[in-house]
Image (cartoon, rainbow, N blue to C red; front, top):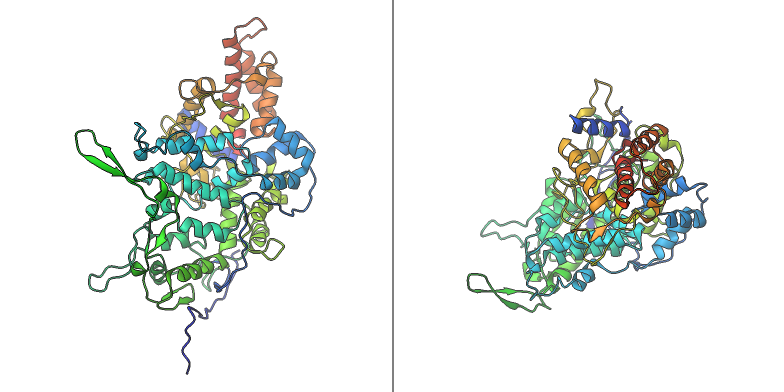
Length: 604
């Protein structure tokens, strides 16, 4: 009998898949504001070759032409799902090009200055800078706010931000030299691959140094029989649970496959985790381009500080530290003594090709961009594009994002009146929208906006600073206060993820921050709104609110809310001879009231 020397062996798996058979989002927001006042889908399939095709940053895609929005409100609604703001110029562009035409133009755009290059342009990469920025997190904050506020490719940056909430690395947990550059490199990978292929993204993230530190792949050693040491399982667990296939088997529409007793079926076992962990051994930072600088320390002594290269380069494999044992996981066996790079390819191909990956990832991206509760049919339609972009390519994220945004469930007007359609607008996105809508700039170009994670006096959320690998909130979160009675509950099976970071402190912190920032801005006025167009409407409160309603809320403020805001503004007499300060106060009050309204906070 001949011995099979191929590195991969497919094993059969028995499966009998079965399909499982409130309060409005606005209502939940109203409750929060009031409080302030007081393995799915069958067996996995791995292959020695995959169907993915690497793609470059800016590219041409063949999206089917669709109708253009018939009015400005429809265009604004689309932009606030697809990008980071809805300016009058962007609205005009969408109305001219149509939804598909606008997306094709966005996907073809270059990504602009990278986060890494921006940091270097500000001097943050200079080891001799007296600010000792190699030990500082604040440049990372300035970098990401700059990226989001100034992006000329808003669809790409919005997609990257959504991906950052799935494949999480948190700046708050990085504690090594050049941590801000490390988070910038992680961000740049998300931007680079946002419209590329998921398989490429998965490998780039796996070998990223920031991820290596965050989830312990860096320095992960093979087993040692004499000492009892075993490979660290952290990344092996999270790459399955959070980055690709999830905890439970899924149907192609994202619903759970149930067993004969009506119970969910787990996607993987502890044995799968332990075996997959062997694949991720032997990797460590690449110091091949490192140059140390001797830095005198306060109080005496010196410190050798490396240059930034090691946090930019992918981690490298040291074969002697890599496990040579066979690894059996998800019904696939990587044979003993398979070289590390080949073992990694087989493992990532297995996860990429798993039937869970498309619905698991696509549902979360729909939740981030459009609605917390997409129908199974919506998930299935998007997952089908993940499986095949129409040209036989699996994992083409440009087509996945386009499918999310162009789906009838996202575009038709039904969702505007459906109580449980839509999502709570994330606090960090509200601030980015304010920056972009009113053309706020940093006069010095430094974009010194701080870490806004503190709920008591800030947003309670800051980009690239999730409190754990589980993001700021879980995709299946159901607020405790929604359990009926009284009649304040979501319907059975409905979720409201963003409400996991909503409490009395966070609501008050958001309102207090925006009350100050809307007028005085950040960094002693370096980052401050001029409200040039809004001030031309200051003597007409109705016109002013109408403009803000369109740009900020896609025209979704109710007549009652608009009337309330207009009445409040009219309570202070403002005339042509009023001082500039009084006129500005009216504009700032209007912006604040819109951004505090329930119909703004819930994005439909």
